[in-house]
Every structure is written in C-alpha cells, then in structure tokens.
Image (cartoon, rainbow, N blue to C red; front, top):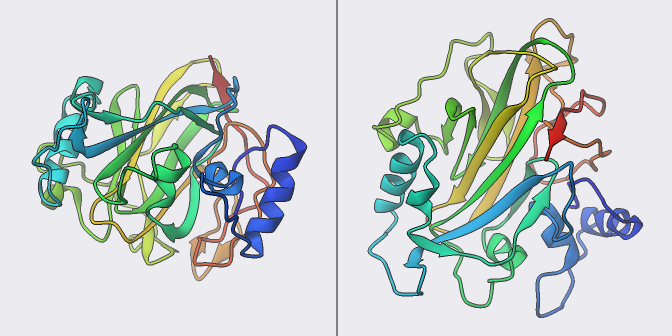
Length: 279
C-alpha cells in the first residue's frame, strides 16, 4: 500500500506489491511500510515527519502517560499553539521521514514505530507523528480539509486550528482546552472512511502567492489498528458524488497516482490540485 510520492523508480514496484498484500520478512521495517508514513530521503516537496513516544521521556525513563493522560498531552500541545516544547518532553525517534500526503489505510499500529526505525523497542500505543511543511495553494480560493484517523488527526494553518478529529469522539469531550468545533457542512454525517467518517474542517480563504505554515498531528492511543486520511476541497469546484457525498482528492504537495487500497479507505478523486511546498 505505497501511498506516497515516489522518489525513485523502485517505490512504484513496492506500491504494487503492497496493494496485493505482499509483506516483507526483513527484521527492519520493509520499504513499503516506511512509504506509508514517509521515506528517509529528504525532498523539497515533502512534509517533515517526527515520531514521539509518550510512554517514555527523552532519556528513556517511563512516564505516567496512560491511555487517558494521552489526551491531556495532545490537548496541551494543540491549545498552546502547537508548542513543540510540549512534545519534546517525550522520546523522539532519531529517524525523520518525508511524505507528500497523509493517506494511511487500515494497518497494525505497530507499523508506525517500525517505519521510524524504533519498532523493536517501542510498542504500538501512545505515540504521535507531527508532520509540518510550508505550503501554498495552487490557486486563490476557499479551501477546507476533510480528515479522519484512528485515534485522531488535527490540522493547523499558521497555528490556527482548522480541523481536530478524534476517533468517533468530539474534541470538546477529549480535548477540552482545544475544544475545536467544526463548522456546519452540507454533509454533516461526514464521508465513510474505514471504521469512521471524514470530518470537514473550517473554510480557509487562501492566496496562491502566500506561504502558510501547515502542521498535521496524528496518533494512536491504545494500540491495535491505525489509519489516517486527509483530503482537500475547494469551494466552487465540482466533484463526483457518492451517496450524496463528494469524492474528494487526496491533499498532496507533490503529484502521485495513488493506488486504490482494498481495506476501507475512502473513495478519492484520481485527479486533483497539487499544493506547492516551500523549504
């Protein structure tokens, strides 16, 4: 299930193998698993991804972060304007990954620490990944993100929260300090995505000649299964409909013809605008 922009020809092969369910047997994380969350090769057109484990601090000592206190850390980080000093209290994987989109189909939550090279020592629960980039939209207009994840996904533009989506829960319940409330949408029930629904974020008036700081946070609380999807809609564009819901393009900062996974991912438009990434 290679779902990120390839940087070498071999990535396309890995993608095809992943779609058919092939899994490597290497002791380290196989290349196609790393591709779902990013790859180690740096690129100007990519999000920078950093992995944190809340179960231990920077020196590897255990913390008191259980499945309930997990939300407290997320709430503090987001409510303080995405202050990275909050995350820096916890263990940070030395491997940095680079990705061009967030589109992770259903898989074991242990795949994330494995992709960041810490799968042998870090278990599958109570982790987050912080992706960040500077971006510009392809054209002037009003845009909004649609997202879903197990256990959550949050998006901020210039540190302003534009989407906060806990799994099957609302942000007021799990993140009281953040307490982001979605705007009313034409499809209030969302769009089917794995075992949850994509939720629409706030409309944003954006200009193509302006650079914006874009932050994405996603993570897993108890362990088990994980998925994460981030789509993008532009006001005024026409989209194919499926059961009265739009079929949206994946949010991308480099074009890639994403293979269609076979495990509950949302339908997506094969052709969509590509945002520009700035270094």
